[in-house]
Amino acid sequence: MTQIRQVPTWDISPRVVVDPYKLEFMSQHYKGRLRPRAAYALGLIFLWARLSARVPRLVNFI
Image 1 (cartoon, helix red, strand yellow):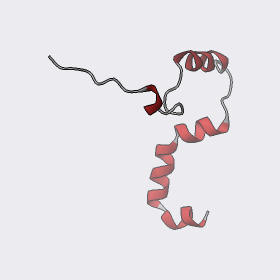
Image 2 (cartoon, one colour):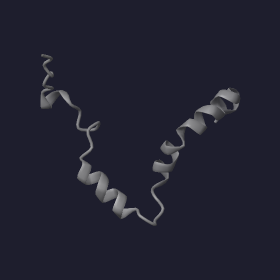
Image 3 (cartoon, one colour):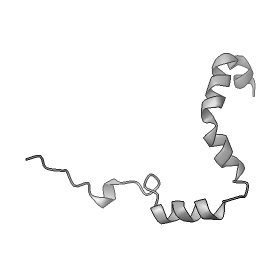
Image 4 (cartoon, one colour):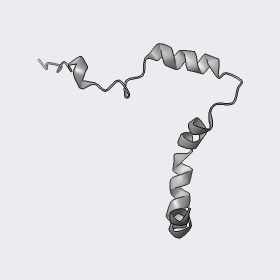
């Protein structure tokens, strides 16, 4: 029989674990509205990574 390891609550970073109620609240709050610019910037980080891989000198200049 396999035992599941209990993780102490002090071992979990509060910045990593987001309360599901907060996620639901934010989802309802921003329904039909624009979100903050930072949310869009981080949501499109894969595009920023591709751009920086193609033109690294330009990105380093900025």
